[in-house]
View (cartoon, helix red, strand yellow):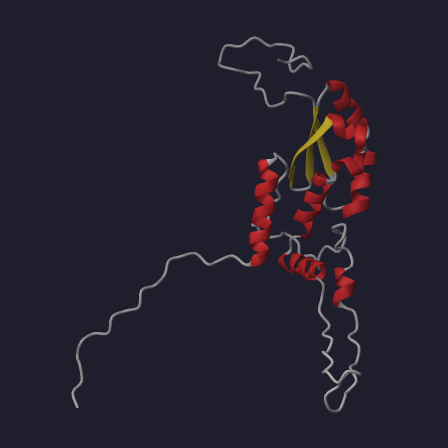
Length: 213
């Protein structure tokens, strides 16, 4: 019996990135769609500062009862001897206690600590419901940074009116998603994206105006 002294070739190591799971892929598709239409895109990649268990005040409309569902008692099953059959003689399929897709989705959101980000996304996506149709027609949510909501208005008059309504708006948001998701509003008039100081030599003007072309 002879043995070979030839070295065994090493198996190539794949540098391909890990395939994301189904939930990650779904959220990436949602982010791409929101970004395409110019909406707010929550960042779900950054680690959550507070776990859901540490901040129970955060709520996502439609996902509020997940904690209660996780604590629900499981009913006792009766032991059945033999193979159960129906009147036609065919075997009766056993019912399995399976969670709905919404329940699984909500539980995964809690597990990954995404509640606060998704609650912020709900605020931007349901802005009209929070402030009413008339106000929503003259305002636009630009972004959320930490717990601050940035809003732009189509006129200086509407920006002034919205600043006077800050307390009511924050109360409406807290009622829906909890008091710790949005704690401050930054309200701006039209055309804040323009830079008024250009170059070292400039003349102080009147600032942003509603008639900017």
